[in-house]
Length: 99
Picture 1 (cartoon, rainbow, N blue to C red):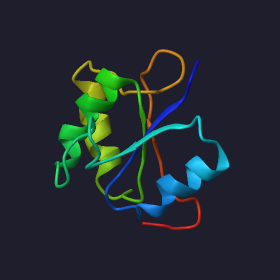
Picture 2 (picture 1 turned 180 degrees about the vertical axis):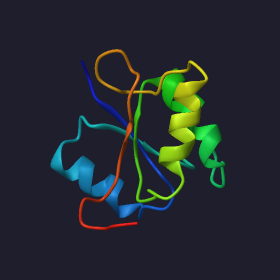
Picture 3 (picture 1 turned 90 degrees about the vertical axis):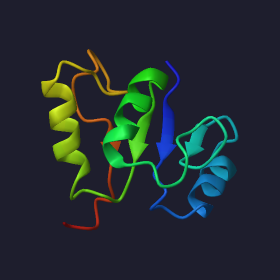
Picture 4 (picture 1 turned 45 degrees about the horizontal axis):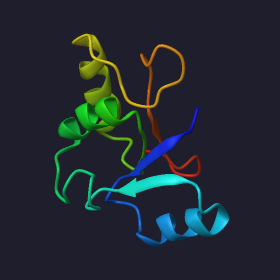
């Protein structure tokens, strides 16, 4: 299984370049890229995209995404690249920052 990522627009574009320098085969898009949600897409609207494209969201926004994800799951939806059944968090935040 290939892991696929979507970088939130709140992360610097250089992160995508750094990932590709580490491994050119990494499947990573950033919000605003062709084939990804447009810049300014509201957080709740990113979750269906993750589900449809089976991507993990990498974000630094831990204030609202968890509640939107909980609502999304409560409605019976799944979230993107989640391992197993897809019924769990599909975002990664910086472990060095707190909300």
